[in-house]
Image 1 (cartoon, one colour):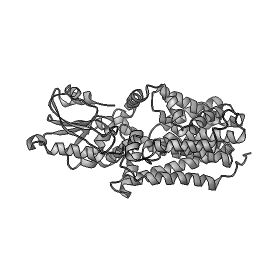
Image 2 (cartoon, helix red, strand yellow; image 1 turned 60 degrees about the horizontal axis):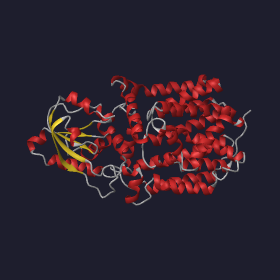
Image 3 (cartoon, one colour; image 1 turned 120 degrees about the vertical axis):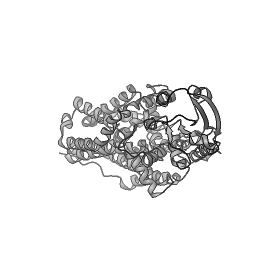
Image 4 (tube, helix red, strand yellow; image 1 turned 180 degrees about the vertical axis):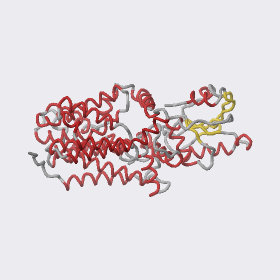
Length: 491
């Protein structure tokens, strides 16, 4: 017979979630679109499709819907991101309750989620890394509750949430693979054949068919994007073995990092969690899988709420050892918040925050990049201007040109990510190449003439990603466009 969990600590948990939401709403108006937000919005406006090289259709749809509410402003998208973060806090607190945690456990788990480095940062922008953690945490809640009450509708609900998650990113497939392996090894073995879950899987498949068809017709570019993840991981963090370390660090300064490790261990060993042990194994397998694939550390952020909740319920139930009982305390939580908040969301002046936060740096300077490019194009001689194409180095820059200079430039091409699959110029002619990394020597591999005709200057720190973006006029192709296009491809 099912045992009733403790009461939901409604007032304190809602106050916690509300405080996090108010904080995010207070900074939601600062600065402009994040690069990914521009990419999703441009995808919907100018490349409407059932699928894209690096994501399905959900994020472009959300970006377009939010733009309809606050045209030309990311405000509505940032409000939606804040609401998703609040939803994740509530789901995490309810997970702690499902694990037998009372008021203290629910607040501890919810706080860890609220001030996680990764989760708080993504709560400020509308991206797949914002939507996925909430949906994964909701799925974990439905799955954990099913283990306790064995209600098929909970598994069916998890299947429906999975169907939504699949329209944003296909990472949820790896979650279910590891859950299935864990259940087959440790039980409950009947999970993989429950009617509610199978029906939800069929609905997920049906909802994803249009995107699958698009991927098939375009040679499965979604899987080619794994090269981009590996390349970025190697360049920024030193390779695949940094993933477990980064996943722990970004779970949260002090509080979150400890609870993530402790919660995973408790799911694997605490006899009170015997029925949920398969989830602990799934977390470990998920980290191993993404490490082997050399993916992104934040791909595991969707299980943070699960392990936070398991740890918090254990801490409340059993007095921690003397050497670490100071960790899950409110002074440590407050210190963690004081460290995390200025590192993740724009509460500091521009001169400080742009240098500290990639999420801030990625929101500044896009109109200026577009204006610099449009000015360089306008200053070309009329005869040359009529034959000139525009290429951008990154998918963020390409999207910024489409959003802010679509009517001032010819068709805009991008050599990175999904934009490369739209194809390059069809006829020979001069090229305006927009980028920060490309040098004259690099571009001279593809063109006989290369000269700088513009550079973006911002009232922002030198570390800003758009400070010093250059516009190059390239003439004299060294090969036909099909060949050049393959050579210019950036993952």
